[in-house]
Image (cartoon, rainbow, N blue to C red; front, side, top):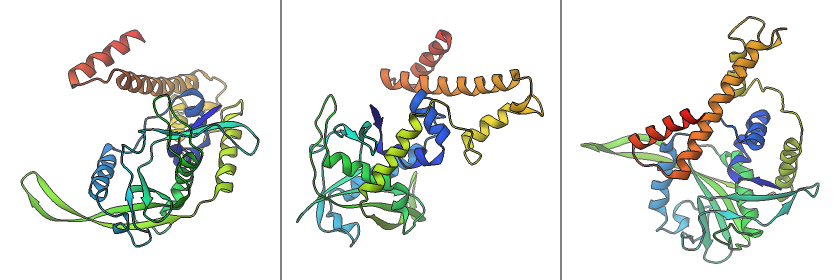
Length: 283
């Protein structure tokens, strides 16, 4: 059984096959996530618009309302589904915005603070379709069932781009943003083809080759070259192994510390420091 998050189906899966394979098979990641400020932007935007009619966002959406946390669980999950080769997978994730339209249907919208682009939703098409698949094929987690929302009639990305500060006071300022909506049409066939390609990758026995266009891959390759001009192709593989092990240790410790923090819900810098020191001693 494969468990896939909607948020990883576009950026992670398409950016680098090697890094995605290592992340899914070995739970090793560089931890290179967007800065938390972008999440703060999303929260502010959602809090402002949630009490308004969704047609206030854009004239491309019909009248409707944002569904509340009382109507939707914190994490949604599909039933067991199957790719084009009959292999099982489950989709699980947390959508940004779900809309119930006044006349008919539901909408799935993501807020993104980003450069404005007419086709922005194409960069998130598998993520959006994955949420649509979950709601039309609902399952549940250990704590809550996912409601069935059908039909999903609208999907898209609402983009926000900061342009100027027009007023300020002590310790605060007012920021102006441009907005643009990028709609997306559903394509279930393309989505299943993409899932099939992902599972084909994950079922391989060998780790994919380094990707020259991936920052994480080039970082490892450069480490391999630190101790000699021959690098990883040298007859003496000792230095290459050391560099690879160094990188692997860094990634492992990063993932280990993050998991420990999440599990224990630490509070305060001093407590966090003590926990990390304890982890280092236990290694």
